[in-house]
Image (spheres, helix red, strand yellow):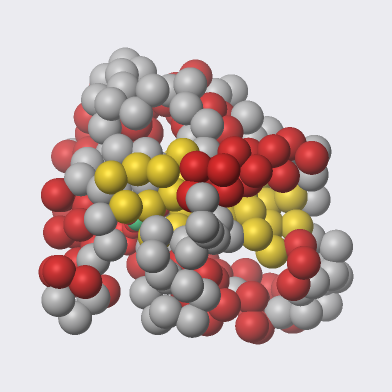
Amino acid sequence: MALGLATGSTQESLYAQLVRLIRQRSIDVSKLTTFNLDEYIGLGEWHRQSYRYYMHEHLFKHLPLSRQRLHVPDGLADNPEKACQAYSEAIRAAGGLDFQLLGIGSNGHIGFNEPYTPFSSRTHTVALSDQTRLDNGRFFSAHSEVPTHAMTLGIQDILEAREIMLLATGRHKADTMAQLYHGDANEALPASALKHHHNVTIVMDREAASGL
Ligand code: GLP
């Protein structure tokens, strides 16, 4: 089984519950393969704001997972473009993603696919938008420390997952969720690519759903 995983504050309680459930039911996770969506360029696995570190803290260190099966794009790769290409290929070699977990940025990004990323995109490097750097700046001690670039699974890679679940919480996501619900698929709102997928579940709290 290959799981596509996401980071962000929205996923934290999900991972806590998942850890509890896996332990309670003694589920064997030793054969589980995971691929994370994205990573900041320039941050290594022991940088506290890297997504690799986030995954270690919230999920990986709590479960008897096999380290070679856990994949996060390498933010320190010498050649990020090549590393991105290899990442998409590794997903295909693993048989594709059975399930992709997603959050959503306040500008509608999924992974780090910012507005106007082609829906046909593969894993790629991206210059983060000002909005995303502002939103994510809350985790860094200074705005200047927020990386300017990232690596992300492409929208096409995401759409190839056999099942997708997107989680959204908080009033600050309400306008975006309303646009997603009422509008058509449009590259201005990356998450709207999910309208082209046949097996998507969207879970929202009352605040995120308050504009529907
Ligand atoms: C980052 C990640 C996204 C995530 C988003 C939302 O930008 N790259 O994958 O969906 O944050 O994060 P939060 O759940 O903290 O709102």
